[in-house]
Image (cartoon, rainbow, N blue to C red; front, side):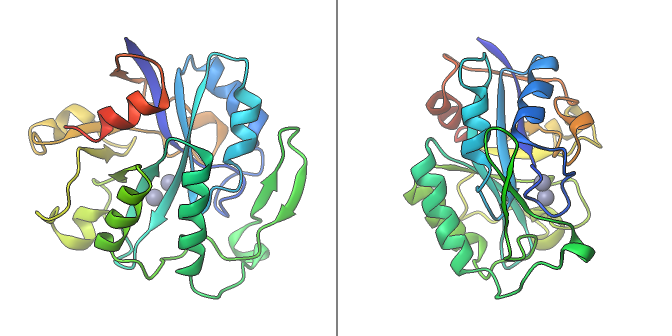
Amino acid sequence: MKLKYDLHIHTALSPCGAEDMTPNNIVNMALLSDLDIIAITDHNSCENVEAVIEVAKGTTLLVIPGIEIETKEEIHVVCLFSDMDSVCNVQDMVYMHLPELKNKPTIFGRQLVLNNADTVIRQEEKLLSFATDLSINQLVAIVEAHNGVMIPAHIDRPSNSIISNLGMIPDDIQLGTLEISRHQSLEAYQHVYSNYRLIQNSDAHDLGFIGICNQTIELPEKTTIALIRALKTS
Ligand SMILES: [Zn+2]
Ligand SMILES: [Zn+2]
Protein backbone atom coordinates (compact mmCIF):
# COMPACT_ATOMS: atom_id res chain seq x y z
CA MET A 1 0.00 0.00 0.00
CA LYS A 2 1.05 3.57 -0.72
CA LEU A 3 1.31 5.65 2.43
CA LYS A 4 1.88 9.38 2.78
CA TYR A 5 4.65 10.10 5.26
CA ASP A 6 6.53 12.85 7.03
CA LEU A 7 9.24 11.28 9.17
CA HIS A 8 11.05 14.32 10.51
CA ILE A 9 8.92 16.56 12.72
CA HIS A 10 10.05 18.60 15.73
CA THR A 11 7.88 19.52 18.71
CA ALA A 12 8.03 22.44 21.16
CA LEU A 13 10.70 20.40 22.97
CA SER A 14 13.28 21.38 20.36
CA PRO A 15 14.50 24.85 21.33
CA CYS A 16 14.14 25.93 17.70
CA GLY A 17 10.64 24.43 17.44
CA ALA A 18 7.59 26.71 17.62
CA GLU A 19 5.77 26.53 20.94
CA ASP A 20 2.51 25.63 19.20
CA MET A 21 4.16 22.39 17.97
CA THR A 22 2.14 20.55 20.62
CA PRO A 23 0.96 16.92 20.45
CA ASN A 24 -2.64 17.81 19.55
CA ASN A 25 -1.67 20.48 17.02
CA ILE A 26 0.83 18.16 15.31
CA VAL A 27 -1.61 15.24 15.09
CA ASN A 28 -4.43 17.46 13.83
CA MET A 29 -2.20 19.11 11.24
CA ALA A 30 -0.92 15.71 10.09
CA LEU A 31 -4.50 14.47 9.68
CA LEU A 32 -5.48 17.65 7.81
CA SER A 33 -2.51 17.01 5.51
CA ASP A 34 -3.79 13.45 4.85
CA LEU A 35 -0.62 11.93 6.27
CA ASP A 36 -0.67 8.23 7.14
CA ILE A 37 2.64 8.08 9.04
CA ILE A 38 4.65 10.68 10.93
CA ALA A 39 7.77 10.44 13.08
CA ILE A 40 8.53 12.73 16.00
CA THR A 41 12.23 13.58 15.91
CA ASP A 42 13.31 16.24 18.38
CA HIS A 43 16.95 17.16 18.77
CA ASN A 44 18.67 14.53 20.96
CA SER A 45 15.48 13.77 22.91
CA CYS A 46 12.22 11.81 22.75
CA GLU A 47 10.44 13.36 25.76
CA ASN A 48 7.35 14.36 23.74
CA VAL A 49 6.98 11.22 21.62
CA GLU A 50 4.67 9.31 23.93
CA ALA A 51 2.22 12.23 24.22
CA VAL A 52 1.93 12.45 20.43
CA ILE A 53 1.37 8.68 20.19
CA GLU A 54 -1.38 8.92 22.84
CA VAL A 55 -3.12 11.77 20.98
CA ALA A 56 -3.01 9.82 17.70
CA LYS A 57 -4.57 6.71 19.25
CA GLY A 58 -7.96 6.02 17.69
CA THR A 59 -7.10 8.08 14.59
CA THR A 60 -5.75 6.82 11.28
CA LEU A 61 -2.33 8.32 11.97
CA LEU A 62 0.65 6.07 12.76
CA VAL A 63 3.29 7.81 14.92
CA ILE A 64 6.85 6.47 14.88
CA PRO A 65 9.13 7.05 17.90
CA GLY A 66 12.25 8.92 16.85
CA ILE A 67 15.11 11.24 17.73
CA GLU A 68 17.29 13.46 15.55
CA ILE A 69 20.71 12.75 17.02
CA GLU A 70 23.72 14.98 16.42
CA THR A 71 27.04 13.10 16.29
CA LYS A 72 30.40 14.48 17.33
CA GLU A 73 31.07 15.16 13.65
CA GLU A 74 28.02 17.48 13.90
CA ILE A 75 26.05 15.26 11.54
CA HIS A 76 22.27 15.16 12.06
CA VAL A 77 20.80 11.65 11.89
CA VAL A 78 17.10 10.82 12.07
CA CYS A 79 16.84 7.62 14.15
CA LEU A 80 13.54 5.71 14.23
CA PHE A 81 12.55 2.85 16.53
CA SER A 82 9.76 0.34 16.84
CA ASP A 83 8.73 1.09 20.43
CA MET A 84 9.00 3.58 23.29
CA ASP A 85 11.36 1.41 25.37
CA SER A 86 13.97 1.40 22.59
CA VAL A 87 13.78 5.13 21.91
CA CYS A 88 13.91 5.93 25.65
CA ASN A 89 16.97 3.71 26.14
CA VAL A 90 18.71 5.43 23.26
CA GLN A 91 17.74 8.83 24.67
CA ASP A 92 19.33 7.89 28.01
CA MET A 93 22.59 7.07 26.20
CA VAL A 94 22.40 10.27 24.18
CA TYR A 95 21.91 12.30 27.38
CA MET A 96 25.07 10.76 28.82
CA HIS A 97 26.95 11.91 25.72
CA LEU A 98 25.65 15.48 25.62
CA PRO A 99 27.81 18.21 27.15
CA GLU A 100 26.80 19.44 30.61
CA LEU A 101 25.25 22.62 29.29
CA LYS A 102 21.99 24.16 30.45
CA ASN A 103 19.53 25.64 28.01
CA LYS A 104 19.25 29.41 28.01
CA PRO A 105 15.58 29.82 27.05
CA THR A 106 15.90 33.52 26.32
CA ILE A 107 18.62 32.81 23.75
CA PHE A 108 17.79 29.37 22.33
CA GLY A 109 14.06 29.09 23.10
CA ARG A 110 12.15 27.07 25.69
CA GLN A 111 12.27 23.26 25.60
CA LEU A 112 8.73 22.25 26.54
CA VAL A 113 7.80 18.76 27.70
CA LEU A 114 4.06 18.36 27.11
CA ASN A 115 1.37 15.83 27.95
CA ASN A 116 -1.45 14.57 25.73
CA ALA A 117 -3.61 17.54 26.73
CA ASP A 118 -0.89 19.94 25.49
CA THR A 119 -0.19 21.00 29.08
CA VAL A 120 3.41 21.96 29.82
CA ILE A 121 4.70 19.43 32.36
CA ARG A 122 8.16 20.97 32.67
CA GLN A 123 10.97 22.54 30.71
CA GLU A 124 13.93 20.36 29.80
CA GLU A 125 17.00 22.05 31.30
CA LYS A 126 19.66 20.17 29.34
CA LEU A 127 20.61 22.05 26.17
CA LEU A 128 19.36 19.68 23.49
CA SER A 129 20.49 21.24 20.23
CA PHE A 130 24.15 20.45 20.60
CA ALA A 131 26.52 17.80 19.28
CA THR A 132 26.95 14.65 21.37
CA ASP A 133 30.41 13.10 21.65
CA LEU A 134 29.17 9.96 19.89
CA SER A 135 30.87 9.24 16.57
CA ILE A 136 28.76 8.26 13.59
CA ASN A 137 30.15 4.70 13.96
CA GLN A 138 29.20 4.56 17.64
CA LEU A 139 25.71 5.73 16.71
CA VAL A 140 25.43 2.95 14.13
CA ALA A 141 26.12 0.41 16.87
CA ILE A 142 23.63 1.96 19.30
CA VAL A 143 20.80 2.16 16.77
CA GLU A 144 21.49 -1.40 15.56
CA ALA A 145 21.42 -2.72 19.12
CA HIS A 146 17.96 -1.18 19.54
CA ASN A 147 16.62 -2.52 16.25
CA GLY A 148 16.19 0.97 14.89
CA VAL A 149 16.99 2.56 11.58
CA MET A 150 19.22 5.56 11.00
CA ILE A 151 18.70 8.02 8.18
CA PRO A 152 21.30 10.73 7.60
CA ALA A 153 19.25 13.93 7.65
CA HIS A 154 19.03 16.67 5.01
CA ILE A 155 22.10 15.42 3.14
CA ASP A 156 21.79 18.28 0.64
CA ARG A 157 22.33 20.94 3.29
CA PRO A 158 25.68 22.77 3.53
CA SER A 159 25.99 22.04 7.25
CA ASN A 160 25.05 19.34 9.76
CA SER A 161 24.84 16.73 7.01
CA ILE A 162 26.90 13.61 6.41
CA ILE A 163 27.92 14.86 2.96
CA SER A 164 28.84 18.39 4.06
CA ASN A 165 30.76 17.20 7.11
CA LEU A 166 32.45 14.00 5.86
CA GLY A 167 32.41 14.66 2.13
CA MET A 168 30.96 11.20 1.45
CA ILE A 169 29.12 8.28 2.96
CA PRO A 170 31.75 6.00 4.54
CA ASP A 171 31.74 2.46 3.11
CA ASP A 172 31.67 0.84 6.54
CA ILE A 173 28.29 2.36 7.44
CA GLN A 174 25.38 0.21 6.33
CA LEU A 175 22.56 2.51 5.29
CA GLY A 176 19.42 1.92 3.28
CA THR A 177 17.91 5.40 3.24
CA LEU A 178 19.03 9.02 2.97
CA GLU A 179 16.93 12.13 3.57
CA ILE A 180 16.68 15.06 1.16
CA SER A 181 15.50 18.34 2.66
CA ARG A 182 12.26 20.03 1.64
CA HIS A 183 14.29 22.72 -0.13
CA GLN A 184 15.40 20.45 -2.98
CA SER A 185 13.81 18.18 -5.54
CA LEU A 186 14.07 14.55 -4.47
CA GLU A 187 14.14 13.43 -8.10
CA ALA A 188 17.25 15.53 -8.77
CA TYR A 189 19.20 13.46 -6.25
CA GLN A 190 17.89 10.06 -7.29
CA HIS A 191 20.64 9.37 -9.84
CA VAL A 192 23.40 10.72 -7.55
CA TYR A 193 22.50 8.30 -4.76
CA SER A 194 21.07 5.47 -6.81
CA ASN A 195 22.32 2.85 -4.31
CA TYR A 196 20.04 4.24 -1.62
CA ARG A 197 16.36 4.79 -0.97
CA LEU A 198 15.76 8.54 -0.83
CA ILE A 199 13.03 10.05 1.29
CA GLN A 200 12.00 13.65 1.75
CA ASN A 201 10.61 15.06 4.98
CA SER A 202 9.51 18.49 6.12
CA ASP A 203 11.86 18.81 9.13
CA ALA A 204 8.94 20.90 10.37
CA HIS A 205 9.66 23.27 13.24
CA ASP A 206 6.36 25.06 12.53
CA LEU A 207 2.87 23.64 11.99
CA GLY A 208 2.57 24.97 8.45
CA PHE A 209 5.36 22.73 7.16
CA ILE A 210 3.94 19.39 8.32
CA GLY A 211 3.28 17.19 5.28
CA ILE A 212 4.51 19.81 2.82
CA CYS A 213 6.69 17.36 0.85
CA ASN A 214 3.74 15.19 -0.23
CA GLN A 215 5.84 12.03 -0.40
CA THR A 216 4.59 8.45 -0.27
CA ILE A 217 6.21 5.12 0.50
CA GLU A 218 5.11 1.65 -0.58
CA LEU A 219 4.74 -0.71 2.40
CA PRO A 220 3.18 -4.18 2.73
CA GLU A 221 1.24 -2.95 5.77
CA LYS A 222 0.81 0.22 7.81
CA THR A 223 2.96 -0.73 10.80
CA THR A 224 6.06 0.63 12.48
CA ILE A 225 7.91 -2.64 11.88
CA ALA A 226 7.11 -2.62 8.15
CA LEU A 227 8.31 0.98 7.84
CA ILE A 228 11.59 0.36 9.69
CA ARG A 229 12.23 -2.79 7.66
CA ALA A 230 11.68 -0.89 4.42
CA LEU A 231 13.91 2.01 5.42
CA LYS A 232 16.76 -0.39 6.21
CA THR A 233 16.77 -1.44 2.58
CA SER A 234 17.57 0.66 -0.45
ZN1 LIG B 1 18.75 18.59 11.39
ZN1 LIG C 1 15.40 18.37 12.26
